[in-house]
Length: 221
Image (tube, rainbow, N blue to C red; front, side, top):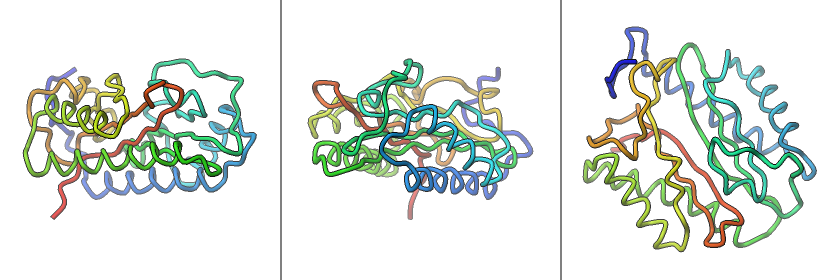
């Protein structure tokens, strides 16, 4: 492995990379439009496989994550409760890592069913904190460490726990791990745009449910 946090190969193309991101976001929204109460994690994974194939995704660089209800508190490597199925008033998130034309994407978003206001609030706040952190990064050029310190302060401000195990990471042309495997939350330099994923995983204070949002950091004019 190279220790080159900003490295890419000669084949890297920013337009292709951004198209992969669009595909990932499209799949997440298509998935949310097709799930119904009663769906299990295994059925959700099968639906994601179908959507990947329909969108021309050649492979995935990390396993699908479809977390339901109490499983939304869990981080990436935690084992799922296979007995769970989506309820009429529930919360869930999808986390996908498609590879499109040799370029990686990584996107996660939380969705709700029914009318539970606490679920809706944490769902909205996960995206809100992502946006606040992206603006803070754009205006202040913090290191990855400082960026996650800010994210933690924003989570506390809104009354949530930031799960620091989901500490962000590099992305790029497949496989990005050739260049750098470390977490953004431990990165002591300012992350450059496009190549770094910011992960915001919140739990409520009782850690009975959570919300997850992730996307790449992009500088906006």
